[in-house]
Length: 475
RNA sequence: GGCGGGAUGGCCGAGUGGCUUAGGCAAGGGCCUGCAAAGCCCUGUACGCGGGUUCGAUUCCCGCUCCCGCCUCCA
Image 1 (tube, chains in turn brown, orange):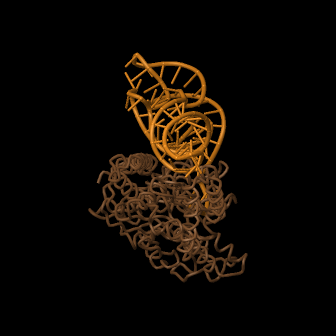
Image 2: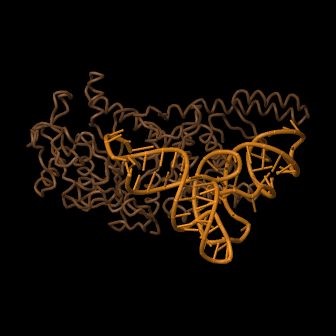
Image 3: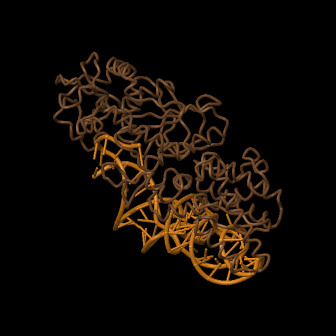
């Protein structure tokens, strides 16, 4: 295992050594399902999916937990606004998220727990924190339970914050906190919130604070100490700072590495629900195919900011199609077995790049190099080199979740069960064109080709006869 | 006010104290082709500004400008 990863808690790239040899445990802060996902959310899912695949490639048995926050302030506010149960809004958005992940080829996590399903685990944690003197009941009978940040010296270490330099939380003065920075583990019931959002507890009826769920669920599914915890860069403070404070104050080891994903900006600003500058996957699918969206999201380094632009997205699509075309031609020419993904080998540059904090840009450069070499081999009639290059490209693309011949992508190319019919019609037309070419009737030949092009069928003449691709396929 | 990240050739995007200084997209030229398409070959010398360290800096240090994120819900 030569993998190195950037760890937010040390702000440095460190050798990654799993806690348990042969296995890796990951926790990803998933979404607060108060609204449909946008592509910024999806980026995190894709980036973590690549990490997960790379760990798997290293032979690790990956236990990957990605939670869903299905109760929070905004969700409850929306429930009142829309006069429907908060959980129905949460569930609807959770389904949308799952569909988006599926269309981008994001593998299912090992488990996807919901916050509301883990109230007992949260209450246990609260009791432990109160017992150890790290949490206290609000003095105003609100039923709130707070974490005492002043009583935990490590507070602020993850994000590099010092309590005294922080801006005071605006809700400080009017709530019974000992320090304005203290955060809620549990929130007492309020008459102004949906009454179906509360649970009975030893502290009265109430609902969970945001941060507590992750500490409780990570503990339940990954144990007291686990390897990697992550999420978007915007979660470092306060969310992750508060999580680590709760867990460590309770005596748990918690995360050994913190891997945070850069933001996706639109128009120079973070894409966010509250700013309203969001673009969803449905919009992107009108421009490019899902695999191309994935390529766009997966190639820049995971910690760098992506400033979304349609032009850049389309460039990514062109780059992906170059690789896709190469692999498809190889499979058509040499047969699927010759270019089977399992026969592919990762080139050294690729592996070195991925091992160095997942340098996906450099890794993709290596794939393009092999693609070029493979194309040259094809031009030279060297089928052996052509085939092995294609298999390697497939294997490396598979690490990105982007093997162009994977059923994930080929089964969504369109055509459906009429594909065979379509192919037969195209072949018939091309036979006529070949006949015209044979008698040097290029006018007729070109008309036939133009008509096919107009119908969305691209024709290429190769030394082995014509090949064609459909517009939805672009290979 | 505090913490963190960033400014790279027409565009996207890695990276590095000097080595032919990624890769892609676009562009121009060439090869191939009846013409195309696809592919291949060639071309393009970039690192925000001002200092400093150094034989040598885009890469290290200092200062500056601008941009982004967090400190409140946020992937």
